[in-house]
Length: 280
Image (cartoon, rainbow, N blue to C red; front, side):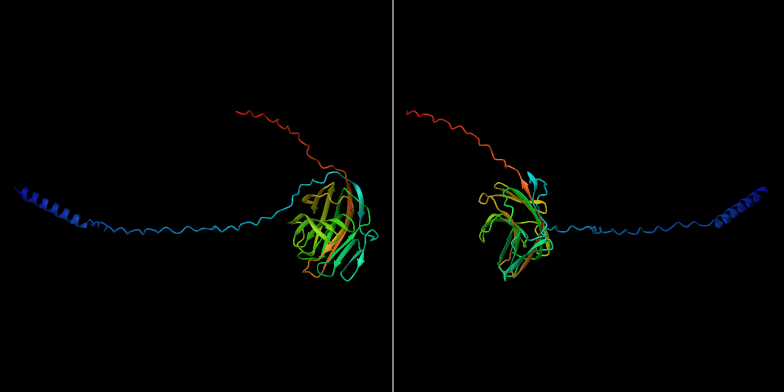
């Protein structure tokens, strides 16, 4: 029975070795769970308006003259081409109120007192239907001072195509020194708003119909039958509140016009015959 103690010894030795080996195995430490950090909720940020809306100003309405390049039919050959190299065809004058002079290829009207009307007429030709154009230069002009072109004119009456230095244009019929309006004053972007300034005037006339232009643009059309023939002239008139004005005119060109304004054809209307009414 000698083998029994030996087996016992082997068994004990095996147990000791196992225990020893178990002690040598490193102990694995489980990680301590870290509590989750609460995530802060990001508040929504304001949207940046890179191009904020701005209040839009109400645009100012400006009436612009039409640029339609017609409305001057029937223009023919030249009647007058005057470069003002000579003043023999014009009446000139000098006084304390103002003067009219021709020099350096222009005719100059200078008024020296308030509310003074000065004009100069060409002594020929006498014309009825025509297209006339002339350049005007404002050397001294402001407010209600006016200037422009006279046509079908004589010493007592004329049509007056008048521009004012307040930016308006109008048509009048002059009787001696009294102005009767034919077309009321209207604002135009082609009228110089005071001096210095330059403008090109044009007048087309056929019969009683008259069409008016500035810088080649149509301004308005008017009709009048009172004056049928006369010459061409220029004028200047100071406003009652202004002491003086000076305007010069140059390059007058007058051409004939052969044109008959269309007239509506009368329409015949049939008058219904009266019907008899029978008494009941």
